[in-house]
Image (cartoon, rainbow, N blue to C red; front, top):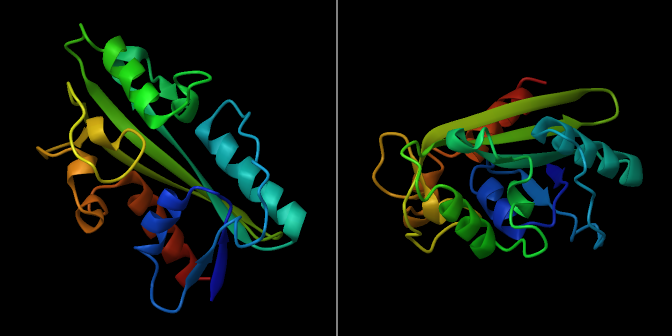
Length: 191
């Protein structure tokens, strides 16, 4: 079975492929020869996820799923949230986003946060969303070289390593994306 993931993010695709069952293969937007970026203008993570999935379904007529992920920091009233990928503004690199977040929390005693991923599946008949959340804290400095995004500064609850210090198989034990994917794969199996 082939399934379309409405994303250009190859690092996300790698994470998703690592939890797919045998016999299921993932196609990304690159495989569909689409280089155009899908807009992310919705005010919520759920909205962005649904918009991207529906955009690809309408464009290609293929059942697909999309995800949107946000890092929600308690001391920042849930920011960066839906704006996580663009937190640093025009310089929206992982490094710039992390630096801005660490600076914003420099004097904060509360470093609690959660990662939230929402996956939307649509096939023209149904649309279903699946949410994965992992709670944790923001580290005081970047540590580790694995993963991407905010992984070098996020420590999942009851752990001592950042996501960037974990191998992918270990990260998948706690990851928001792996949790949302587990729900999604269960849904596909029971259809």
